[in-house]
Each structure stands twice: as C-alpha cells, then as structure tokens.
Amino acid sequence: MYKYFVFVDQCIAPKETAFLMPDCHKTYVMEEEEIGSFSIGWLPPRNITYKIGESPEFIPDDEAMPWKFQSTLDLKGVPFSGKRALYGGGGFVAEFGVSMKRAYEISQFLRDNNWYDELTRAIFLEFTVYNANTNLFSVVQILVELPTTGGGLVSNFVHTFRLYHYAGGAAAIVAVVFQVSISTIQRNLF
Image (tube, rainbow, N blue to C red; front, side, top):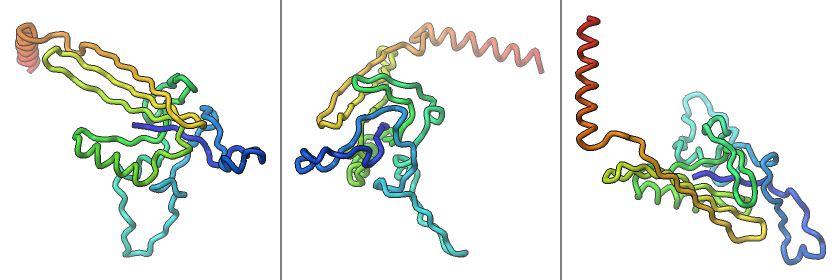
C-alpha cells in the first residue's frame, strides 16, 4: 500500500469561511507532492547523536519505511492516472507482508500513528493472487482518491493473465525434455 499527500499549510482559508473550516489544504498536484522523510507519526526526522557505548533506538524497517518517501525509480513504478489527478509512481509505502495476521498488525500500527490523515490525497492498495486450479494470476490495484472536500473516489483495476503456459501433463513432458537436454549438454561439456 502506498500513499500521496500534500504539504501542510499550503493555502489560507478565506476569512469569511475560516470559522467553519479554519484549515485549508490544496489538492494534489504531482509537481508539489511531499517527498521528504519523517519519523513515525509524521514528526520531523530525528537528528539524534549518541555517545560512544550507547546504542541508538532501533526502529524496525516495516515501522520506519512508511514515513520515508520512495521515488518512482526506487519502486520501479510509472505514473498513474486516477479520476482526480496524475500520480507520480513513487510515494510513502507500507508493505503488509504475506499473512493476514501481519497485515492486520501493520494496518493497526498505521492507523494508530496517523499514517493517513487530512493531508492524504490518494491511497493505493496493490496485491497479486494466484489460482492454481486455473493457472491464472490476478494483479489487483485499488485506488482511493481523497479530495480536499472529504469523501473518497474508489477505482479498481484487475489484470488477469496466465504466466505459466505449460500445465498438467504437458508441463511434465516439457520439464523432462528440458532436464534431459541440459544433462546431455553438461555431459558433453565436461
């Protein structure tokens, strides 16, 4: 899962409506996205020095990483067009792991530490599933765009494809022929 958000205090609420909505936040624009690194809970990064012999506070990567921006190149991503904006392909990433228990723990940790808040403009949830009975993979991407006015716009994309073209009896024959060919080549070389 990864998110995009905007800088704090980017606009000034009109004085006529300030009593209704004192905070004002801009909509997401790719060129103005936040790309900094933070400590847990969106606090400024810690600049702590330690004396010799002291050990620094250890924060596991799965807890620290959601607050560190990762670029499009880091994530090997591409820009993505949603209903409200074009998103750059990088972002703040939280990995849920492979077990439901671990995913729930990370989700709870993110909620407890305000990972998504009023500055969040988009959250992507991406995962891949495999059905062994049909030999099909499905890559699922769910996007929730959060406009400044509240609410959310949900988009989902599911791409299903066959990655392994040989299954069943044909796969066994191909595997045996391949292994015999490789062992014959190795015997001839050595």
